[in-house]
Length: 163
Length: 163
DNA sequence: TTGGAATGTCAACAACGCTGACGTAGTTTC
DNA sequence: GAAACTACGTCAGCGTTGTTGACATTCCAA
Image 1: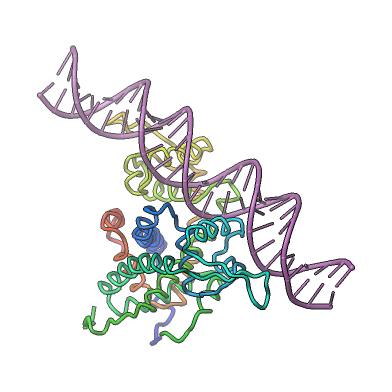
Image 2 (image 1 turned 90 degrees about the vertical axis):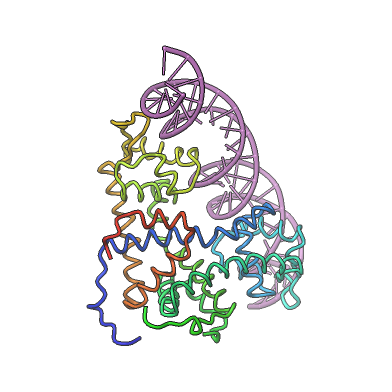
């Protein structure tokens, strides 16, 4: 963390506005590639999010997914139903608690996940490469502090051992 | 930019996936405060975007706004109509080219813009403060490289003299 | 056995994207 | 001056994805 004192961090409102715009434009770029892939299958971002988090936590329950995504069960259910019907997601009744449904990606689901993730990672990697290693750490740190505390818990809840 | 050679920039797929999730969760936080304010007035993010960019470029034309926002004129028109009806935006026929409509925020519009912007800047400022000065530069750089080239043009097209 | 949790589903609605078509000024070009 | 193009608005319809509210089912736990 070096010795960055607070006095070094003067940010004008104009600079903050620029950062807000950067966030807006960057998020459009961030979702552009997946959006194109999803559109060919009649899916949207909600499908992508479900696929992403099921891939990250195979066997996760519906309730767990609801907490992470922060949407209503009706909204999530609509998306899950199509993914299950299309054979991308498998829903299995829990063994310990049989009310729960454990969600995993099928082979086809993993294939789509890989396609989406590869495109998105490629853009991330390119941006990181152009920005340099120092920028990468700063980027991650700011993003993390921009989250709501609850969202941040979900973010931190994954395996923390990879950095 | 120091001497960061490419060899220093090894990013595993897992690290990139983490960055993708960070972007997702951070964007939720980024929009959370404005969303709450907008909801009390029956507005959504589309209204926020229109207000933001009209504030940034007072007197901008509809076509200009369309290019920046990247939506259809029907979609933008629906939003602009409500904002004009509600007295937040003023639309004036152009003097040189009378086909054009020049958009500006009214006093009420500026007030809402300030409310939205203040909340969003406060979160940005807090995140930057916790992350430190080095993180700020890295954050901005990565975001900029994540944009589509066209979006980046719009981003850079503002006054570049503020950093 | 009963209360409550987890899940699923139906219905209705809103915000905000989209396409396509059409009209109406106003400008530009030939 | 007519024709073509541009800027804008609007109507109609549709899709994704969020919401609330209500209700049924299944099953754990006290």
